[in-house]
Image (tube, rainbow, N blue to C red):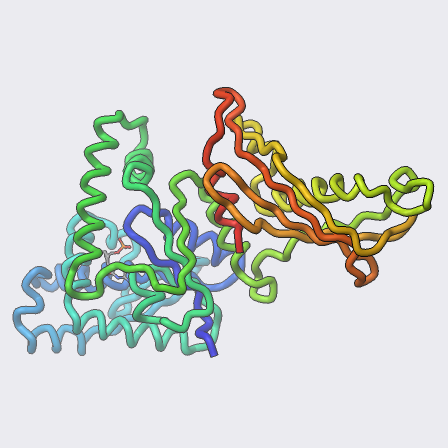
Length: 361
Ligand code: DC
């Protein structure tokens, strides 16, 4: 059976901890930031006067450091979020100093430390509750059998911008370029390091969120989580056929099915957290360039039809949406529309917005 874990891995500043936290709160489950575990060990080592860069050089000292360390993940009194506790202390914000960050990066390279935390992370999940765990190796090493795996990334420039904006102000192009090149160098280091290199699990869903905000990223994650686990319920448009939709034969006029497809698309995009109107505000339109429909049966006045559908293909500037229409469990029609993605201001075709291509299953 798959582990009761939603694994979110990815490089630094990919937005994974913000989205993991939001996801956990939305699903009302525990959020574990595994980076804070490495940080807590580094914080303790520094406090004990140990040099984290040299900790691995003395195996017996390292062993005694780990065997005398009690790590836990609990809610501090009066707090709603779980936090790392080490030797009965919640270090909280003390884990986020530059010194501790550098120390965490050092201890994260030590195989014994990784093994120690691997055991802790697995024992924590074995308690049985659903958890969202965020880190670098959750989907690959800690829980290769996690029920859901996401790998979040973003272009170095997008990550640099986010990081600089966190510090307040509007960063200049030069600043963004400088930080982006540092980020790219660190990615390279993380991907090629000997111990626990950062890599995407083969079965993880890759999401490049360079163009997505936090809410949009969350929407995509929820879309890929099954409804029974708190994820998004697939869009179903239910519609009672009005008199005006029927023809002289007393059935829905064939051309109306294209309206139903459009009504479905509207609902689908609202459900996905990216309404058509919001997309248009950004200057993007999706004119239909091709469509088709096969009719199997007909619907009459007052029938309730159900329209379902999915994004079937996203290629460059084109997106294909396929729909099915049922009535009382009977298939009435299947159809599709192909849209071109148009930048209306420039009058040019552009790549399909990332959020839409991320909603393809
Ligand atoms: O995500 P963070 O910045 O809080 O992580 C702190 C350090 O720990 C960072 O150097 C990466 C490392 N880390 C890791 O190697 N494996 C994890 N699962 C989590 C963090």
